[in-house]
Image (tube, rainbow, N blue to C red):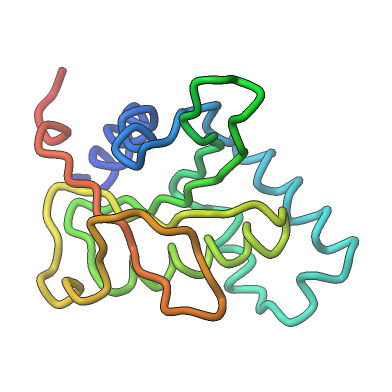
Length: 157
C-alpha cells in the first residue's frame, strides 16, 4: 500500500522531477502512449531480441515523462524523455528496471532518455549506481540513475 501511495504522489510531481533535472515537463505518457511506442518499434523490428517479460515491464512502466530542455527560446528546446521507477524504498531492482526502460525509449525514439528512481527512502546498496547530475542513457558508457527523493509524498493531502 505504501508503494502505491508513493507512486501516486510522485506521478503528481512529474513537473518537479523534470525541474530537478533542469528540464521542462511537456506531459506524462499514458499507458496507450507507451504501448504505441512499443508497437511502432515492433513494426520496425527493434523489439525482436526483447523478452516477453521485459516487454510487459516496459509497457507497465511506473512513469514516463516527455520533457524538453529548459532553453529560453521555445524553438531551441530539444525533446527528452525521463523514465521513472517509483518505490517507497528504491532498490537495485528499481535501478535495473529504469535503466532498461531508458535504454528502450532511447533505442525506439532516438531521443535522449534519463533514468530516474524516485521514492521516500533508498537502499544504501544502490548508492554507487546513483548520480546527483542527470545524464541520459548511453549504451557505450555506464548509465547512472538520478535519485529524486520525495519527503512529503507519504503524507496525505
